[in-house]
Image (cartoon, rainbow, N blue to C red; front, side, top):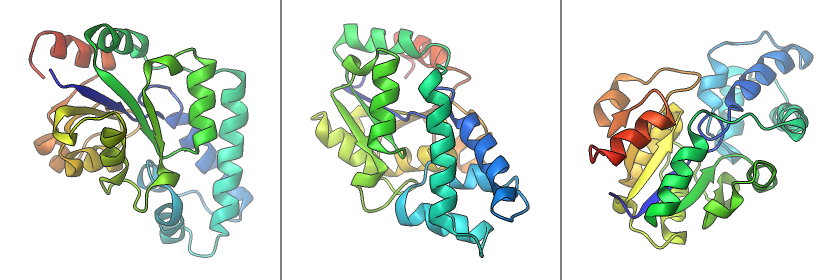
Length: 216
């Protein structure tokens, strides 16, 4: 078993990635664009300059910063009422806690959103560190966020699990040298991820059971 565990947030701990997908699709026409179904999975997990670049790749004429702000604001308003949890989230956190595994969240979302979600669901105490995409130079699929998270929990990246639901995030975990477990949410894994992830699981419960059995 590894010494550390790093979790993505949206679509992995919380069922919020679908809210982002819905919001990207709803807000595109508001900004005079025809919604492109390929855009939400492409932008998932990105932040900062990279996110703006992805927006402009799909919507060249849009005000990217205003578009991003509007979508983020809509999702924040939705989760302020209730943060939907993914199945098995509490079980795997409690299991690692009892085993002495040090945990971190590494999310592309703004720090305030991450902290609010963790506090409002009562799971903030499980995490020794929280890293946001705004704290690193290169966003996912670059490994920066996971390398920083591993550093903050005092572990080598190679001695950490990474749990991710997205393509960009899973690629970042692999690039960081972490044992990367993908639990797909909105998009299926690509061929390279099927080959390079330590395992692709259907749920956090399945991942926990495999770790308990010594298979991860």
